[in-house]
Image (cartoon, rainbow over all chains, first blue to last red; front, side, top):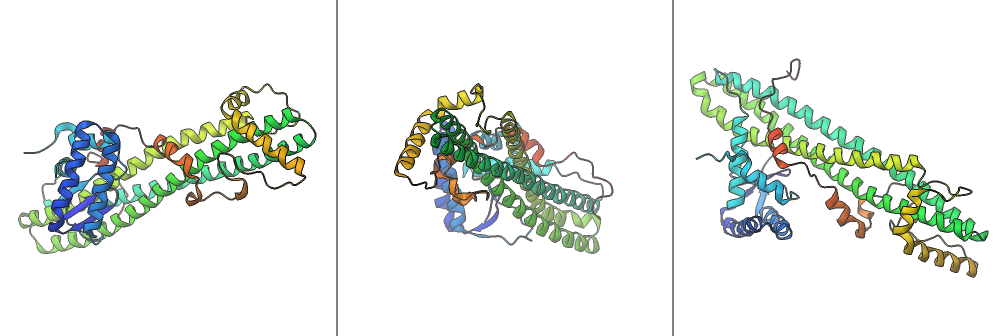
Amino acid sequence: MIVRILGEGQLSVDDAAAAGLNELDAKLSDAIDRGDEAEFRRALKALAAGVRAAGTPVPPDSLQPSELILPYEDADLAEVRKMMTDEGLIPG
Amino acid sequence: MSVMKRVTLIFRSKANKALDRMEDPRETLDYSYQRQLEMLQKVRRGVADVATSRKRVELQMNQIQQQSNKLEKQARNALGAGREDLAREALTRRSSAQSQLSDLQAQYASLQAEEEKLTVASQRLQSKVDAFRTRKETIKATYTAAEAQTRINEAFSGISEEMGDVGMAIQRAEDKTAQMQARAGAIDELLASGALEDVSGTPRDDIQAELDRMGAGSDVELELQKLRGELSSGSTPELEAGTGGNAATGNAPPRPAARPAPASDGVQSATEPTIPASDVGESAIPSADPPRTGDGT
């Protein structure tokens, strides 16, 4: 599957690596729920690093959309919260 | 993958909303291509703006470094002439200059990183826009309006995601440069106020210096002792850098890699964008903008 790290580009990630990334994502989600900025930063960095380690860059001329999008690695908690809920536009 | 999934959904819905559909889907291709070219111009302007800010910071670093060197020399001379009060004043001002300098170094590094990011983003978008143009021509030549829709959707989803990403990157860079410019303005004022200026013969009534002294007192004592030691032993080695660690770098703008570690963390977090992410999100995918005339093709 293709994962985009905002501000960085798209990576093609092996499905086998998804479980490990799920775990990191859960930690990130937990940190956001608790409003723990320090833990949030650690988890976001770890998730981005995990995606990078498991993925290979998608060629720049590819027009494939991403299955998953990861916030900027240096985004702060408030910024990511906004990105998750902005205007309640979640379809379906 | 809850966080990534939610961010993806929001991002995608914004990107889809940004897409204005024409009656003939093939026209939508041309319209979207126009918008892509506009975005490319915008990101290139963004790179230029960040570079301008970076150069301004570089200029200020040079000015402050010169001032700092001069103050150090004056302190040495003053102490040699038995004017400890004047030497103290000079070192106080030098300490203030050094702290400004380390702040500027952090800003410089941050702007440089931003510039690099935007440059890469611009290249990435360029590749995708080129790919889109090829795809667009193929679709127009091969498919009827009715058939074209699926193919068009495929091409759009990839490019609109990239546009959204680049749009947000530009917005973030703009926020960052705006903050830096405000700070750069403050430093210009500081330089103009004379707070870091020549102290020989000036009366000690400068409020800024008084304030600096309160914060920098202990540093000044240490430096005074060091100078005393040097003078009494008869040698005159270079005064070691205070907070900034730049006495040896002369007038050359210090590279970010050589940035002293202690100052970086605090300054870094202080320079992060504080503009609400909703603004970023809103402007990330410029949907309602009418296409500019005379642009692109």
